[in-house]
Amino acid sequence: MAGNVKPGNTTRTMRGWAVVMSAFLLVPLAAACGNSGVTRSPEVALITVDGEAVPLELELATNFEVVLDRNTGRRDPVVLASDTILLTPPFSQSFALGGDARLLVRLKNTRPDTVEARMRISIDGDAKYDQSARLGVGGFLEFIFVSRQGP
Image (tube, rainbow, N blue to C red):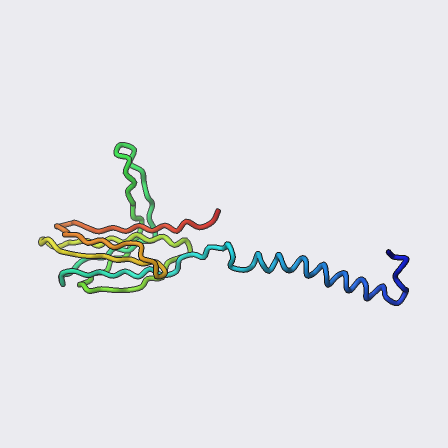
């Protein structure tokens, strides 16, 4: 093949070869950098509470572990750090999720009376939880979300 190249065309031929090879290398690289096949982390949780207009406690945690009780087989959350909001229904607020997208939400009745309550939670617009209950003293509704990212 080198015998067919005229002396003045060697640079042009090498440049053409480099352009063709660059195209073959860049197309797969561009596909790998695109969004196809890549799962993005959840970003926002919307928490809505409806029910009787009495004070309730909303506990939010992103720092928690889920521990297996070997005697009962239950998996129970152990909160390591949380924030508490006192609210009176109706209540609706969005919360940004962290990089590892973990969220524990507990709606508690700390009053001596039984209370009707409904808690709904959506993650990035997708409904994940919708429960109603009559909450006695210390009763609660609980939602746990742990994003499953990666391989």
